[in-house]
Amino acid sequence: MTCTQHLHCHLQYNMANFSGGFRAQRKASYNAASTQKTGHNPSGNTRGEDGQETRVAIRDVTPHEANTVLVGIVITKQRVHTFPDKRNPGSMRCKFTFTLRDSPADYINATYWGSEDHLRQLHSSFKICDVVEVQNCQVSSKITSGDPQNDKWSPWTPSQYQVNISETYSNLSLYSGWDYTEFTALAHVPLRPPSDYHTLSDILSNGPSMDGSHINILAIVKHVCAVREMTSKNGKPLRKCDIHLMDEGCSHFQLVMWDDEMIELAQSWTPRENIIFAVDVKVSNDSYCKCMLATCDQKTIVITNPDSGEAHQLYQYAQTVESDLFKEPAGEDKRTSFTEDANDNISSISQVYTVEELKNEMSTRVGDDSCFTGILFAYLTTLNIDQGLGSVLYHRCTKCSFRVGLDSSLCLNKACSLSSPMAEGSFSSDVHYNMLVSLTDCTGTVDSVLLTGQAAYSLLTCSPAEMLTKNERTRTEIKTGLVLEKFKVYFKCLCSQKKSSVRILSMCMVDSREVTLA
Image 1 (cartoon, rainbow, N blue to C red):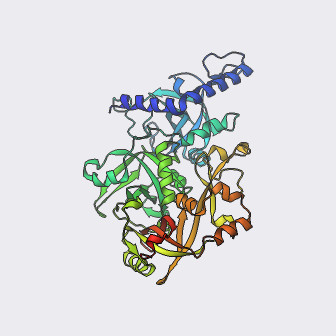
Image 2 (cartoon, rainbow, N blue to C red; image 1 turned 45 degrees about the horizontal axis):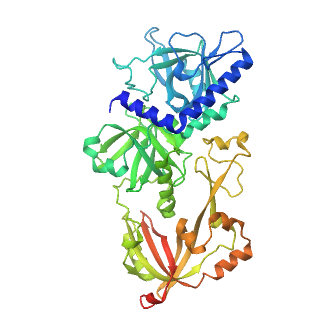
Image 3 (cartoon, one colour; image 1 turned 180 degrees about the vertical axis):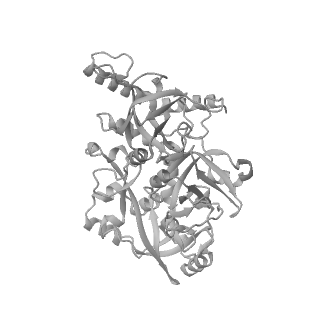
């Protein structure tokens, strides 16, 4: 697919899903503001009363226009680079680049030039997902090896222009205007069509043909490793952070980060809670570990919890995966190849285990990164739905799917538009089941078995929202009717480096025809 075709598909997707309404709202907002200031503005941009300062949408920027002002959300940001000044031998120049976005389809690269002290102070004053205002910037055409759409050392952008910001003549500051939330909403809008990504198993199985290329990845955050301090060959200090990812077909894949800004963004991620859409990561074959991995470089942009059907579906899958799979020791640098996840269709499960046999199988598989399924005939011996709902239910923000407390009035995800105090009153959340139970037969007991989703709903015969409204007495009555009853339990056991754990796929009371099996 050519760049032009790719951009056409990208714009079609965004306009169909988000852009039309967003742009109409933004244009109406611009016009309203302009009417207040000047009485008329047919372009949809804003101009100060003195006519000297023009706020321009990224899609409308033109070269050599004086006193241009841009407002947008920072979707990626690179470190400060220092290099010799050719015009002044013996002195150094500094710059850093970031990417600004003000609509679903429009984003542009901006480079700030200046002295080292000034740039380092300014660089630390904002981060990815902040909304900034750039005043008196200069717009110019891209200068990239003869191809105007080939951004070699910075992210690809649909704009044919780039922005230059000067320490002497320009100003960059955090933005807190009346339309602030319209920009923060862009933090979760995908930069590419929803199906424009490779699955992790595709990367692993087609490794040699993809080595060195830039691709898009949609995946679950499995683990964020501790940041490691390193030194380059020329003595420069470096920081590295490994992110372990997974999806439906791959239980482990490594994403490597070297940039401080990207590493800081990753520190806000929670395993299982966050889905990432990583655009233009570089995939390579690690000869030392003999496996494929991905690296974030200057071209990479990462969208956290993208608002797309594919991302929501992957998030739902993450909630069905046993929680212990996400509990990896901090700082562990695990590099293993993937294993195929078993099919969770219970109709294909026939192997019957006793609790003792299940425990033995789990102990032999510790460290294998494998999984297996089976059937248990066992009594339900622990079901603590009457001891506080905090261990039974949890809430997720309806906007970004971030996990929040039962009594939260705002989203805890700082990148979500519903985390702002201005969103108080409009915040809403969905409630979900997540509890640990115990199962017992004549050979022993298996504790901390995860019961979630549809399996919990079928057992308790009420939705999570309905359970939230029930008093302690009613919950105790439900518990009394289930504990010490015998169930046929379909389970899936997931084995990680340190331990194995069990998740219930389905459970129902044993009927008379299965008494002999039980």
